[in-house]
Image (cartoon, rainbow, N blue to C red; front, side):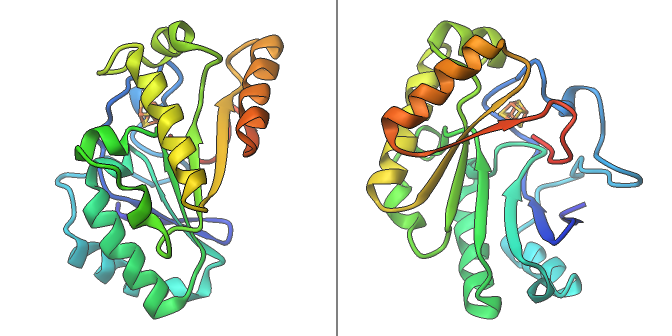
Length: 202
Ligand code: SF4
């Protein structure tokens, strides 16, 4: 399933690949969310296929479009940007991406200036208060450097004027959540605690 609706948001599932293997990721235990939503892609859709699906869903009736999981959307950043441009030109919708913040590393370039005008909100999974906790929770392909990469991506997104949200899942302790809240406050961005049983996929 490429597009799926939750409430008044339309979600786009562009890849099942990820640079992390988070212990709380619902990909490890489920094929999807809700009834009949199979988010395992048989093959990754092209931009044209995603756009064709958006048209079937009449995307303009939704309040926002969200690039999300199952997987890390910015492993296909060029596809995401092409589709986001279409969404902006066709429906003028707010566009959000839920990302693990490894897009620059995956693309081998700083993509953040290219996101301006295409994405309104970049919601980045902070997940942990420090490198060691991040690696323990996320088992990142880049090791503890994945934490630094994610924070650098968040800073660069803020610098280019994007609305940045740093999020954690409530699988860490209240004290650790507060430490994460402080990281977001120091960066001057919004902080969000996601519930483990929330309705958004990873
Ligand atoms: S929770 Fe997100 S970042 Fe973590 S493994 Fe799942 S898709 Fe990747």
